[in-house]
Image (cartoon, rainbow, N blue to C red; front, top):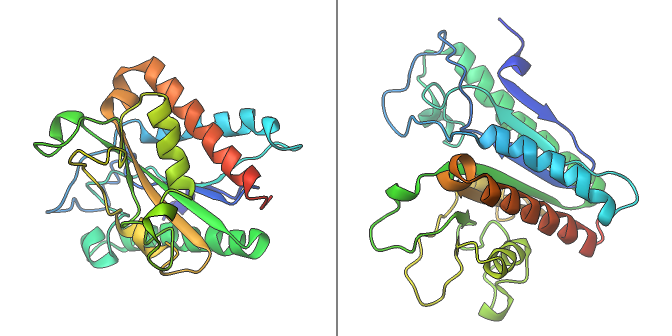
Length: 255
C-alpha cells in the first residue's frame, strides 16, 4: 500500500490554529469504491485557498509576533465521492474498503494529535474546518452571503450557554465584525433577516469544546465567488481573515 501521506497532507505549526480541509481533494483512488449516497461533490479550490491562507498567515505574522508563525494543517487529497471525512465513520465510506478505513482513521487521528499538542503547549486549540458552497444553491428566502460560519449555536466555542451580550466575545464574533466592516456579506451577521446558519459538520462538533475542554472549532464555508470567480474578493477575504486570526492569538496572549 502506498504511504498515507500521498493521500493526506499534514504539518504541525507553531500557533494553536489547525486548518482542516476534508472535501477539496481530486485524487480518484480507484482502489476505494465510490460512495452510493450523500453529497459526493468537491469543494473546489479549498485546498489552494487554504495554502494561500497559510502563506498570508506566515507573511503577516511579523506584524504581531517576533518570530514567524504558521498554523498546523491537515488536508485530504482524496475525492469526497470516495470518502467523506466530515461524517461519522459508518457513513464516510463503503465498509469493504481497507484503504478508506486507514485514511479515515489517519485523518482523525492526526486531528486528535494536533489538538493534544496544542492543549499541551498552549492550553488552547482552535480548529477551522474549511469548506465551500455555491451561492445559487442557498435555501430559498435566505440572504445572499459570501461566507457562512458554523459552531452548533456556539456549542463548539463555549462549553455552556452564554448570555446574549457575550455571544460575540470570541473568534467567531471577531470574524463576523471584520467582514461586516468590509461589507462582505457573512452569516450569521444580520439580526433582522433569515440567516442560513450552519451547525457545523462532524469534525466541528466532534472536536469542539463541548467534547474536548480547551478545544474550540468552527466550520467556515466560502462561496464559489470567493473560491473561483472573483480574485479581488478572494484576496481581500483571505488577507482579512489571516489578520483577524493573528490578532486573536496575539490578543489572548497564548503564544
